[in-house]
Image 1 (cartoon, rainbow, N blue to C red):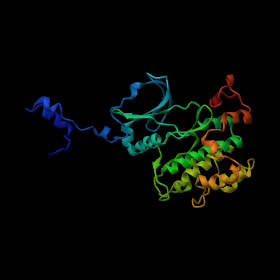
Image 2 (image 1 turned 60 degrees about the vertical axis):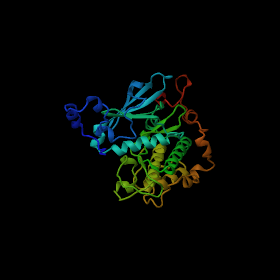
Image 3 (image 1 turned 60 degrees about the horizontal axis):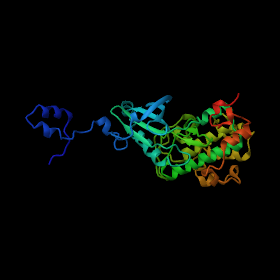
Length: 339
């Protein structure tokens, strides 16, 4: 029996033929290619769809589409961030596997306390929809822009949360490849929440990859220099850049001597950690949770308290920066800080 799908033009020929119309109505016609290429990750018919949400406002524009703040209907009014992507752009830019990786990784890793979950994703004829939990505290980048260099005690808590996130992803067989403050949000208690897995990829420990991607200021030298293959160590370089940025509110210079000079007002432990993370030779770079947790920057620091969220970043902001908000509410909405 020939089970090959009929081309679309065959449907018209069948309808114009002497074949019984009732029998032809039972024929299952092939799925259009623009829908098929995104299967099975993006379902075509889903109980949750774009009509299950009310759009509240535009959050931002992305490479393939836009992100909106939405409210789920027929519920308690839960808020989400809905990313709407144009299929034609994704196919044109050869990004099909990229968006598939994004929803696979985020939906499977979203149970982590510092990773934003992605409970819904589907497609219609022209667009893809990815719905994630809404985090209302704003970007870490905006906190840095508003407050400048962060106190070292707060940097220690934030960096510890980032270390736990990276370690979890790497052990899950994921390389993130785009660590930067724009991709880190703050929840209502000021804890980090990692978003945007668009450049992430499944990569088991010990394996390498070769795609050149990321954000230039945070890219490891082995990626910038187009070395044939790199590994998970690139994420630890980016983490070092972010730690330097939190301590100084600036991007790091190229040489270690210049980095030393710019970190003269922070502890030796913080300086040493940045330098070891931003080691040009990836063989000598710190590249695991086990190596990082024993550094002097984390002396007498309990990482078990991090995953349990026993540290209160908002309280540290109040204590160390002396900032208050209207009605003494959460400092995660840091745009309300007084100048």
